[in-house]
Image (cartoon, rainbow, N blue to C red; front, side, top):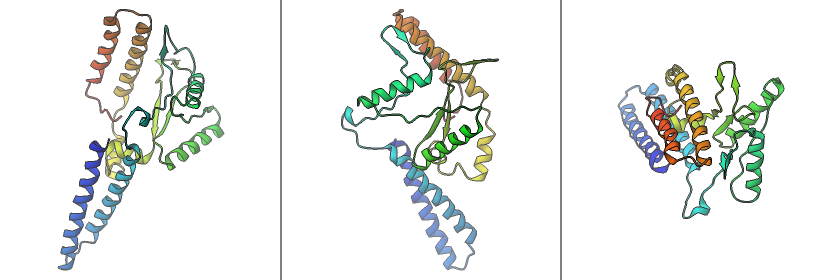
Length: 236
């Protein structure tokens, strides 16, 4: 993480510092640089937020005890998969594992989306999460596999916070012109790929726990890899 995002933060700070220095020299010669300085200040603020956004995800790791794993599914165990249990069951099991010190707990809540009050409570909870530096939340139907009138329903939707999105899309993603561009992306292709990958992953696990030949498992795995080679923005 540090090697990927740290250089962006460092180069942004260095470049903007040089730009402001040049602007101040021009100002000393009587050039009107008020608008330019305002732009530099705005970009410097966004660059600072970017540096602050990724740094909490980096900490020293010297052995396995320094790793933090916060699960939200038990996909499979010896002899079976667990897709027939709803997410309440999965998260309750994750809580039990966390109490035993095996993993880190994952904060979760259950809401009835038919209740306007519950929806407002969900939004308030999300705002609390991101205000404390959280990535955001993942919204899922209660059942692990859910079907609607048009077939399989998307199994999960990531609702990320403003500052986490800055890590993904860059320091200036929320500048007005950039937001217009980002909103024009078509997400249908990504959704279709996600559903196909979900179904293939489900099938791969079923074949694996049934002790089918590995070539049968690898059929699904390579199908997922083939789908991921499609020219779709991986940040979606």
